[in-house]
Image (cartoon, rainbow, N blue to C red; front, side):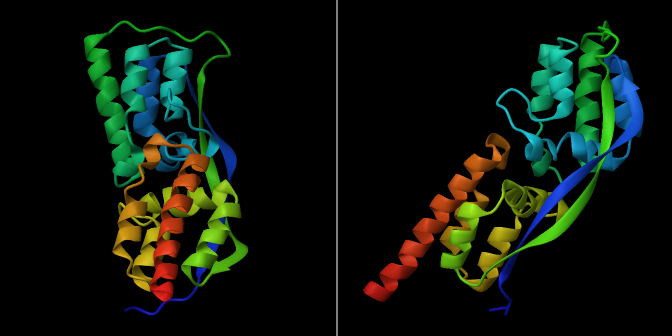
Length: 222
């Protein structure tokens, strides 16, 4: 088995940067999505999960389209895009454009946002830092997961899927190498982060790791 060190927890914070781009209707939104940076696409989709998560919206575009333009059908279609199931912000962009184009072909008339209600495109400067917490075994890992900030959960369990370019996360990758506990690894990778907010996801991670720790303890008792 590959030798690795302790798991070192990190977290990320985002500093917003205005792109200077704003739009007031659906065709303008479509044009801007095609042209803005991948950083902006990532911020308005993937990083939405760091800022908030509701059952109605999963990205900033869907929220604006529904709340401002009242285009409920398109808002639902955009909210069903799971950015973490795609490989990159570039793929997320293409899927957004495909669904908006389909909608514009079916419904060519569009509403105009009132002054002050336009959509403003932003980017984010992401700063990653260590939080000074490490885990050398599952028991220590479980304790850390209970108390670290959600920004750390996001960085290791959400952002990693895009950062690593794989459909995996930092937690299960470390556990796979250090313990080889396939049941635990499979359990963590089965968590559907698209359907849950960060605190709910934390609770699911804790429950799955707790069961693994109990299994380890039972080996010594037996």
